[in-house]
Length: 215
Image 1: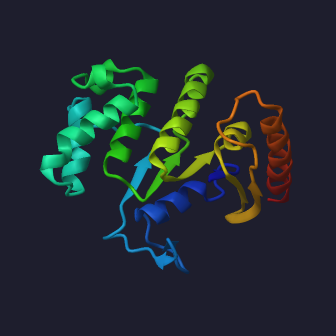
Image 2: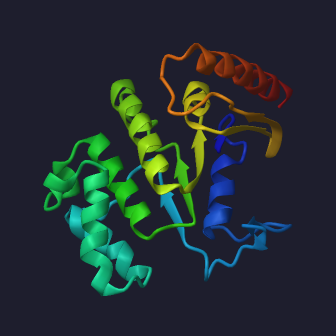
């Protein structure tokens, strides 16, 4: 699911509530139909900036997450190997963040988030700081990883085409409220230049502009 909306409409706040980084809210948050238990739930989070620990290499950045999520030490090596390979970083396991490109740093942030086997993967505009060619490649890679891992993903973006290409649902927000909820019925695997994606994008942009105009 992609959350699409103007700056300040509450998209990132929603992710922070689900992640337990912000507890100031009314109502309830349910995961799999049950009230969210932040102590028991395992949530992965990929931010707009990679937020890697600069003094740790790629392997140790993932190991840090595994340690803090109390994943059994006996599983660490296989988990690290799998997620570095899946994100195309197997040859860069001993590299530090400053030795990686922007796209590679975001791949490492994704590998770290996936390593804890999250029930929900939250992604807050993770590709917005990248050039369009790199972002496009990472969007396609993300869909391949999603196909293999079958994780629920909540993805925040300002990019209507990114939302239309990635999502099963595009939720349009404005003024802190949901203003539209659109199903994307384009079959998978998707072609980036599929005219059906452009049609979804057109409808989503109309809803986005209407919502933004109201607020």
